[in-house]
Image 1 (cartoon, rainbow, N blue to C red):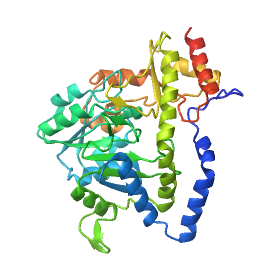
Image 2: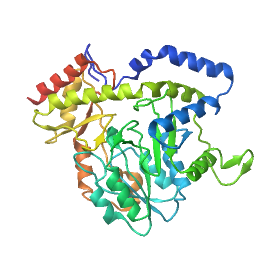
Image 3: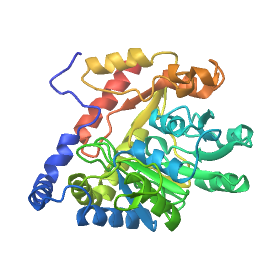
Image 4: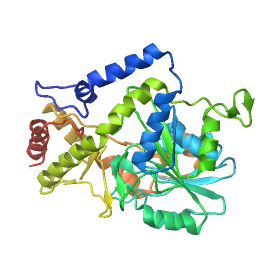
Length: 374
Protein backbone atom coordinates (compact mmCIF):
# COMPACT_ATOMS: atom_id res chain seq x y z
CA UNK A 1 0.00 0.00 0.00
CA UNK A 2 1.41 3.38 -1.02
CA UNK A 3 0.89 6.11 1.57
CA UNK A 4 1.94 9.73 1.88
CA UNK A 5 2.57 11.86 4.96
CA UNK A 6 -0.79 13.60 4.45
CA UNK A 7 -2.84 10.45 4.05
CA UNK A 8 -6.63 10.85 4.15
CA UNK A 9 -8.37 7.78 5.65
CA UNK A 10 -11.58 6.42 4.19
CA UNK A 11 -13.01 6.69 7.72
CA UNK A 12 -11.59 7.50 11.14
CA UNK A 13 -13.50 6.43 14.25
CA UNK A 14 -10.69 7.37 16.64
CA UNK A 15 -11.34 11.12 16.31
CA UNK A 16 -14.96 10.69 17.36
CA UNK A 17 -13.98 8.66 20.39
CA UNK A 18 -11.39 11.26 21.42
CA UNK A 19 -14.10 13.96 21.53
CA UNK A 20 -16.25 12.08 24.05
CA UNK A 21 -13.64 9.87 25.71
CA UNK A 22 -14.23 11.25 29.19
CA UNK A 23 -18.00 10.67 29.03
CA UNK A 24 -17.59 7.15 27.72
CA UNK A 25 -14.91 6.24 30.24
CA UNK A 26 -17.05 7.39 33.14
CA UNK A 27 -20.12 5.54 31.92
CA UNK A 28 -18.28 2.30 31.11
CA UNK A 29 -16.53 2.26 34.48
CA UNK A 30 -19.90 2.67 36.19
CA UNK A 31 -21.18 -0.38 34.33
CA UNK A 32 -18.10 -2.40 35.22
CA UNK A 33 -18.36 -1.54 38.89
CA UNK A 34 -22.11 -2.27 38.95
CA UNK A 35 -21.68 -5.91 37.94
CA UNK A 36 -24.80 -5.61 35.73
CA UNK A 37 -23.38 -6.41 32.31
CA UNK A 38 -26.38 -7.99 30.56
CA UNK A 39 -29.69 -6.15 30.45
CA UNK A 40 -30.56 -3.75 33.24
CA UNK A 41 -31.59 -0.09 33.40
CA UNK A 42 -28.89 1.23 31.04
CA UNK A 43 -30.07 -1.06 28.22
CA UNK A 44 -33.70 -0.18 28.90
CA UNK A 45 -32.94 3.55 28.92
CA UNK A 46 -31.09 3.34 25.63
CA UNK A 47 -33.98 1.42 24.06
CA UNK A 48 -36.42 4.07 25.26
CA UNK A 49 -34.22 6.89 23.99
CA UNK A 50 -33.77 5.34 20.57
CA UNK A 51 -37.49 4.60 20.24
CA UNK A 52 -38.23 8.25 21.02
CA UNK A 53 -35.59 9.44 18.56
CA UNK A 54 -36.84 7.22 15.73
CA UNK A 55 -40.49 7.89 16.56
CA UNK A 56 -41.74 4.41 17.46
CA UNK A 57 -43.47 2.93 20.48
CA UNK A 58 -40.98 0.10 20.95
CA UNK A 59 -37.27 -0.56 20.54
CA UNK A 60 -35.62 -3.90 21.25
CA UNK A 61 -31.84 -4.06 21.54
CA UNK A 62 -30.04 -7.10 20.17
CA UNK A 63 -26.59 -8.43 19.35
CA UNK A 64 -26.15 -7.01 15.82
CA UNK A 65 -27.84 -5.52 12.79
CA UNK A 66 -27.87 -8.98 11.24
CA UNK A 67 -29.73 -10.36 14.25
CA UNK A 68 -32.16 -7.44 14.05
CA UNK A 69 -33.16 -8.48 10.54
CA UNK A 70 -33.29 -12.16 11.48
CA UNK A 71 -35.49 -11.49 14.51
CA UNK A 72 -37.85 -9.30 12.48
CA UNK A 73 -38.33 -12.09 9.95
CA UNK A 74 -38.79 -14.67 12.71
CA UNK A 75 -41.34 -12.53 14.55
CA UNK A 76 -43.22 -12.15 11.25
CA UNK A 77 -43.53 -15.92 10.96
CA UNK A 78 -41.58 -16.05 7.71
CA UNK A 79 -39.93 -19.38 6.94
CA UNK A 80 -39.72 -22.29 4.54
CA UNK A 81 -41.69 -21.82 1.32
CA UNK A 82 -41.89 -18.04 1.68
CA UNK A 83 -40.23 -15.43 -0.53
CA UNK A 84 -38.77 -12.09 0.52
CA UNK A 85 -37.91 -9.38 -2.00
CA UNK A 86 -34.75 -7.35 -1.50
CA UNK A 87 -31.82 -5.70 -3.27
CA UNK A 88 -28.73 -7.43 -4.68
CA UNK A 89 -26.63 -4.31 -4.06
CA UNK A 90 -25.94 -4.36 -0.34
CA UNK A 91 -24.04 -6.27 2.34
CA UNK A 92 -24.93 -9.96 2.43
CA UNK A 93 -26.52 -9.74 5.90
CA UNK A 94 -29.72 -8.48 4.27
CA UNK A 95 -30.23 -11.61 2.18
CA UNK A 96 -28.37 -13.96 4.52
CA UNK A 97 -31.09 -13.67 7.15
CA UNK A 98 -33.78 -14.55 4.60
CA UNK A 99 -31.95 -17.78 3.89
CA UNK A 100 -31.34 -18.33 7.60
CA UNK A 101 -35.07 -18.49 8.39
CA UNK A 102 -35.57 -20.92 5.51
CA UNK A 103 -37.16 -18.47 3.07
CA UNK A 104 -36.05 -17.60 -0.47
CA UNK A 105 -34.40 -14.26 -1.31
CA UNK A 106 -35.82 -12.68 -4.46
CA UNK A 107 -33.55 -9.99 -5.87
CA UNK A 108 -34.86 -6.94 -7.70
CA UNK A 109 -32.64 -4.49 -9.57
CA UNK A 110 -31.75 -1.03 -8.28
CA UNK A 111 -32.12 2.55 -9.43
CA UNK A 112 -28.82 3.79 -10.89
CA UNK A 113 -29.23 7.27 -9.39
CA UNK A 114 -29.97 6.35 -5.77
CA UNK A 115 -28.50 2.79 -5.55
CA UNK A 116 -31.76 1.78 -3.81
CA UNK A 117 -34.42 -0.70 -4.93
CA UNK A 118 -36.18 0.12 -8.18
CA UNK A 119 -39.74 0.10 -6.90
CA UNK A 120 -41.18 -0.24 -10.41
CA UNK A 121 -39.64 -3.70 -10.68
CA UNK A 122 -41.00 -5.00 -7.39
CA UNK A 123 -44.52 -5.55 -8.74
CA UNK A 124 -43.35 -8.09 -11.31
CA UNK A 125 -41.38 -9.98 -8.64
CA UNK A 126 -44.38 -10.51 -6.34
CA UNK A 127 -45.79 -14.06 -6.31
CA UNK A 128 -48.29 -15.88 -4.07
CA UNK A 129 -45.27 -16.94 -1.97
CA UNK A 130 -44.06 -13.37 -1.36
CA UNK A 131 -44.47 -12.43 2.28
CA UNK A 132 -42.18 -9.43 2.83
CA UNK A 133 -39.95 -6.77 1.32
CA UNK A 134 -36.65 -5.65 2.85
CA UNK A 135 -35.71 -2.23 1.46
CA UNK A 136 -32.19 -1.05 2.30
CA UNK A 137 -31.65 2.66 2.86
CA UNK A 138 -28.23 2.28 1.32
CA UNK A 139 -25.33 4.62 2.14
CA UNK A 140 -27.74 6.63 4.31
CA UNK A 141 -30.21 7.53 1.52
CA UNK A 142 -33.89 6.75 2.23
CA UNK A 143 -36.00 4.65 -0.10
CA UNK A 144 -39.30 6.15 -1.32
CA UNK A 145 -41.24 4.70 1.60
CA UNK A 146 -44.54 6.28 0.58
CA UNK A 147 -44.65 4.35 -2.68
CA UNK A 148 -43.23 1.21 -1.10
CA UNK A 149 -45.74 1.11 1.75
CA UNK A 150 -48.63 1.65 -0.69
CA UNK A 151 -47.35 -1.23 -2.80
CA UNK A 152 -46.85 -3.48 0.21
CA UNK A 153 -50.32 -2.70 1.58
CA UNK A 154 -51.94 -3.56 -1.74
CA UNK A 155 -50.38 -7.05 -1.55
CA UNK A 156 -50.56 -7.50 2.24
CA UNK A 157 -46.77 -7.64 2.56
CA UNK A 158 -44.60 -6.96 5.59
CA UNK A 159 -41.96 -4.25 5.21
CA UNK A 160 -38.72 -4.64 7.17
CA UNK A 161 -36.55 -1.53 6.81
CA UNK A 162 -32.83 -2.19 6.78
CA UNK A 163 -31.59 1.01 8.43
CA UNK A 164 -28.07 -0.21 9.17
CA UNK A 165 -26.48 2.69 7.29
CA UNK A 166 -29.17 5.30 7.81
CA UNK A 167 -29.85 6.06 11.47
CA UNK A 168 -31.39 9.53 11.50
CA UNK A 169 -32.33 9.65 7.81
CA UNK A 170 -35.77 11.09 7.06
CA UNK A 171 -38.45 10.34 4.52
CA UNK A 172 -41.23 12.97 4.34
CA UNK A 173 -40.69 14.15 7.92
CA UNK A 174 -40.58 10.62 9.35
CA UNK A 175 -37.37 8.90 10.35
CA UNK A 176 -36.53 5.67 8.61
CA UNK A 177 -37.25 2.76 10.91
CA UNK A 178 -40.61 4.23 11.90
CA UNK A 179 -42.43 3.77 8.59
CA UNK A 180 -42.32 0.04 7.89
CA UNK A 181 -43.52 -2.73 10.18
CA UNK A 182 -39.98 -3.01 11.53
CA UNK A 183 -36.84 -0.90 11.48
CA UNK A 184 -33.54 -2.76 11.84
CA UNK A 185 -30.40 -0.97 12.97
CA UNK A 186 -26.73 -1.85 13.19
CA UNK A 187 -24.32 -0.25 15.66
CA UNK A 188 -21.18 -1.56 14.00
CA UNK A 189 -18.41 0.97 14.78
CA UNK A 190 -18.38 2.62 11.32
CA UNK A 191 -22.14 3.30 11.24
CA UNK A 192 -23.55 6.79 11.83
CA UNK A 193 -24.48 5.61 15.32
CA UNK A 194 -21.67 3.18 16.04
CA UNK A 195 -20.69 1.41 19.23
CA UNK A 196 -17.36 -0.04 20.32
CA UNK A 197 -18.25 -3.51 19.10
CA UNK A 198 -21.28 -5.24 17.64
CA UNK A 199 -24.83 -4.23 18.49
CA UNK A 200 -28.23 -3.78 16.91
CA UNK A 201 -31.85 -2.88 17.53
CA UNK A 202 -35.33 -3.35 16.10
CA UNK A 203 -38.02 -0.66 16.20
CA UNK A 204 -41.75 -1.22 15.77
CA UNK A 205 -45.09 0.33 16.66
CA UNK A 206 -46.78 -3.05 17.11
CA UNK A 207 -46.86 -4.18 20.76
CA UNK A 208 -47.51 -7.83 19.87
CA UNK A 209 -44.54 -7.95 17.52
CA UNK A 210 -42.39 -6.20 20.13
CA UNK A 211 -43.30 -8.88 22.67
CA UNK A 212 -42.37 -11.60 20.17
CA UNK A 213 -39.03 -9.94 19.47
CA UNK A 214 -38.19 -9.77 23.16
CA UNK A 215 -39.13 -13.42 23.58
CA UNK A 216 -37.15 -14.66 20.57
CA UNK A 217 -33.99 -12.78 21.50
CA UNK A 218 -34.07 -14.32 25.00
CA UNK A 219 -34.02 -17.99 23.98
CA UNK A 220 -37.78 -18.02 23.33
CA UNK A 221 -38.78 -17.34 26.93
CA UNK A 222 -41.20 -14.82 28.40
CA UNK A 223 -40.84 -16.20 31.91
CA UNK A 224 -37.43 -17.38 33.02
CA UNK A 225 -36.87 -21.07 32.24
CA UNK A 226 -40.23 -21.41 30.48
CA UNK A 227 -39.54 -21.68 26.76
CA UNK A 228 -42.48 -21.08 24.43
CA UNK A 229 -40.64 -21.19 21.10
CA UNK A 230 -37.17 -21.86 19.75
CA UNK A 231 -35.31 -18.59 20.12
CA UNK A 232 -31.76 -17.32 20.04
CA UNK A 233 -29.34 -15.56 22.36
CA UNK A 234 -29.17 -12.02 20.98
CA UNK A 235 -28.79 -9.36 23.63
CA UNK A 236 -27.33 -5.87 23.54
CA UNK A 237 -24.84 -5.74 26.38
CA UNK A 238 -24.89 -2.95 28.94
CA UNK A 239 -21.48 -1.51 28.02
CA UNK A 240 -22.52 -1.04 24.39
CA UNK A 241 -25.85 0.45 25.49
CA UNK A 242 -24.05 2.93 27.75
CA UNK A 243 -21.77 4.01 24.91
CA UNK A 244 -24.64 4.27 22.43
CA UNK A 245 -26.76 6.26 24.86
CA UNK A 246 -24.03 8.90 24.96
CA UNK A 247 -23.45 8.87 21.21
CA UNK A 248 -27.17 9.18 20.44
CA UNK A 249 -27.08 12.69 21.92
CA UNK A 250 -24.50 13.71 19.32
CA UNK A 251 -25.98 11.89 16.35
CA UNK A 252 -27.86 14.81 14.77
CA UNK A 253 -24.74 16.99 14.98
CA UNK A 254 -22.61 14.31 13.35
CA UNK A 255 -25.22 13.73 10.64
CA UNK A 256 -25.29 17.46 9.86
CA UNK A 257 -21.52 17.40 9.51
CA UNK A 258 -21.83 14.50 7.08
CA UNK A 259 -24.42 16.46 5.10
CA UNK A 260 -22.12 19.49 4.92
CA UNK A 261 -19.27 17.31 3.67
CA UNK A 262 -21.57 15.76 1.05
CA UNK A 263 -22.66 19.24 -0.09
CA UNK A 264 -19.03 20.30 -0.56
CA UNK A 265 -18.36 17.14 -2.53
CA UNK A 266 -21.45 17.81 -4.68
CA UNK A 267 -20.39 21.35 -5.50
CA UNK A 268 -16.77 20.52 -6.29
CA UNK A 269 -17.24 17.21 -8.13
CA UNK A 270 -20.30 17.94 -10.27
CA UNK A 271 -18.25 19.62 -13.07
CA UNK A 272 -15.73 16.77 -13.35
CA UNK A 273 -16.10 14.55 -16.40
CA UNK A 274 -15.82 10.81 -16.04
CA UNK A 275 -17.70 10.43 -12.75
CA UNK A 276 -21.30 10.52 -11.57
CA UNK A 277 -22.03 11.98 -8.14
CA UNK A 278 -24.68 10.34 -5.90
CA UNK A 279 -28.27 11.53 -5.85
CA UNK A 280 -31.02 11.50 -3.25
CA UNK A 281 -34.77 11.76 -3.66
CA UNK A 282 -36.24 15.22 -3.10
CA UNK A 283 -38.60 14.04 -0.35
CA UNK A 284 -35.79 12.44 1.63
CA UNK A 285 -32.99 13.66 3.85
CA UNK A 286 -29.96 11.42 3.72
CA UNK A 287 -27.31 11.05 6.38
CA UNK A 288 -24.41 10.03 4.12
CA UNK A 289 -22.91 6.98 5.75
CA UNK A 290 -20.95 6.83 2.51
CA UNK A 291 -20.32 9.28 -0.32
CA UNK A 292 -20.17 6.96 -3.31
CA UNK A 293 -19.39 8.13 -6.83
CA UNK A 294 -19.58 6.17 -10.07
CA UNK A 295 -16.42 6.07 -12.18
CA UNK A 296 -17.15 5.68 -15.88
CA UNK A 297 -15.33 4.00 -18.79
CA UNK A 298 -13.93 1.14 -16.73
CA UNK A 299 -11.52 3.41 -14.86
CA UNK A 300 -12.67 2.72 -11.29
CA UNK A 301 -9.74 0.49 -10.25
CA UNK A 302 -7.25 2.73 -12.04
CA UNK A 303 -8.63 5.82 -10.29
CA UNK A 304 -8.59 4.11 -6.91
CA UNK A 305 -4.91 3.24 -7.31
CA UNK A 306 -4.02 6.77 -8.45
CA UNK A 307 -5.88 8.30 -5.50
CA UNK A 308 -4.09 5.98 -3.11
CA UNK A 309 -0.77 7.13 -4.53
CA UNK A 310 -1.85 10.67 -3.66
CA UNK A 311 -2.67 9.63 -0.10
CA UNK A 312 -6.45 9.39 -0.57
CA UNK A 313 -7.90 6.11 0.71
CA UNK A 314 -11.18 4.87 -0.72
CA UNK A 315 -13.45 1.84 -0.35
CA UNK A 316 -15.53 -0.24 -2.74
CA UNK A 317 -19.04 -0.99 -1.51
CA UNK A 318 -19.86 -3.42 -3.14
CA UNK A 319 -17.65 -5.14 -5.74
CA UNK A 320 -20.00 -8.08 -6.47
CA UNK A 321 -23.82 -8.20 -6.57
CA UNK A 322 -25.47 -10.71 -4.27
CA UNK A 323 -27.45 -12.53 -6.96
CA UNK A 324 -24.20 -13.67 -8.60
CA UNK A 325 -22.45 -14.74 -5.40
CA UNK A 326 -21.45 -18.43 -5.17
CA UNK A 327 -23.77 -18.97 -2.21
CA UNK A 328 -26.81 -18.09 -4.35
CA UNK A 329 -26.00 -20.02 -7.51
CA UNK A 330 -28.86 -22.41 -6.73
CA UNK A 331 -31.33 -19.54 -7.20
CA UNK A 332 -30.55 -19.58 -10.91
CA UNK A 333 -29.69 -15.93 -11.56
CA UNK A 334 -27.55 -15.33 -14.65
CA UNK A 335 -25.13 -12.57 -15.54
CA UNK A 336 -27.05 -9.75 -17.19
CA UNK A 337 -30.32 -10.50 -15.41
CA UNK A 338 -30.02 -7.51 -13.07
CA UNK A 339 -27.92 -5.25 -15.29
CA UNK A 340 -27.97 -2.03 -13.28
CA UNK A 341 -26.67 -3.69 -10.12
CA UNK A 342 -23.99 -5.51 -12.08
CA UNK A 343 -22.81 -2.34 -13.80
CA UNK A 344 -22.88 -0.31 -10.60
CA UNK A 345 -20.67 -2.87 -8.86
CA UNK A 346 -18.01 -2.18 -11.49
CA UNK A 347 -18.30 1.61 -11.09
CA UNK A 348 -18.74 2.50 -7.42
CA UNK A 349 -16.02 4.15 -5.35
CA UNK A 350 -16.66 5.50 -1.85
CA UNK A 351 -14.68 8.61 -0.97
CA UNK A 352 -13.54 9.52 2.55
CA UNK A 353 -16.62 10.29 4.65
CA UNK A 354 -16.81 10.76 8.41
CA UNK A 355 -18.04 13.72 10.50
CA UNK A 356 -14.55 14.80 11.53
CA UNK A 357 -13.19 14.97 7.96
CA UNK A 358 -11.47 18.36 7.84
CA UNK A 359 -11.78 20.88 5.04
CA UNK A 360 -8.08 20.41 4.38
CA UNK A 361 -8.51 16.66 4.05
CA UNK A 362 -11.56 17.04 1.83
CA UNK A 363 -9.74 19.54 -0.37
CA UNK A 364 -6.98 16.99 -0.80
CA UNK A 365 -9.55 14.43 -1.96
CA UNK A 366 -11.15 16.88 -4.38
CA UNK A 367 -7.86 18.17 -5.78
CA UNK A 368 -6.56 14.64 -6.23
CA UNK A 369 -9.70 13.66 -8.15
CA UNK A 370 -9.43 16.73 -10.36
CA UNK A 371 -5.78 16.01 -11.12
CA UNK A 372 -6.43 12.36 -11.93
CA UNK A 373 -9.39 13.05 -14.21
CA UNK A 374 -8.28 16.31 -15.83
